[in-house]
Length: 113
Length: 113
Image 1: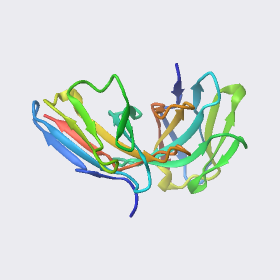
Image 2 (image 1 turned 135 degrees about the horizontal axis):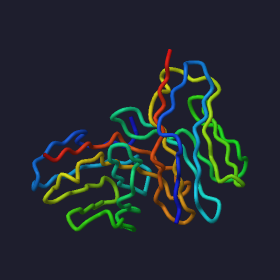
Image 3 (image 1 turned 90 degrees about the horizontal axis):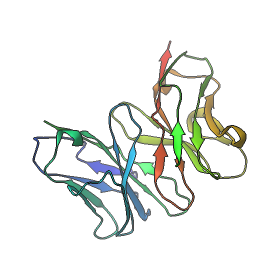
Image 4 (image 1 turned 60 degrees about the vertical axis):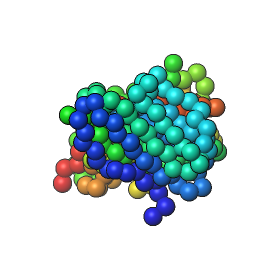
């Protein structure tokens, strides 16, 4: 299967702990996006990369959040000192620059207790 | 500011009936428009997209959508719904020259046998 993959699929953590999620995009896609989805809402943009460069960050992305894409392939999203409000589904998507059709992975569901 | 509105939170149809899901957008120029479907606990699957040209676009799973500039709408249709179509449907726009999708809040489709 050559789709977008995300790991882990589920993560339960205690408030104050750090968590890291991984996203592997479709291999030929140079753009990679992170979105967050809370219950009953559509996904909200967090950040995106073109190759290894992080080009945009949403104001939703507080200082506790950091994302990397070190070699322009997979990406990690780290949340430090998790809070209950961080509980959400974290979705990764990838695309070519043109056309910009974003293909999503299955998501990582984070529960902060 | 760009936005997407999906007026119907929840729609129920009988299997075999026709379906129309509404989507309205706010944007000063012609946006790129998308419909995604999300099954419970899963990521989003791209159903169809509109970039330019023919205003009636065909997608996967027998879905189609029509772009109407005068009404700022991009409604999704299917002539005969199957039970497997039960899911959450999201309309999204991508502003030209930016790379983040802006999603509506979604419409949950329930299908009765």
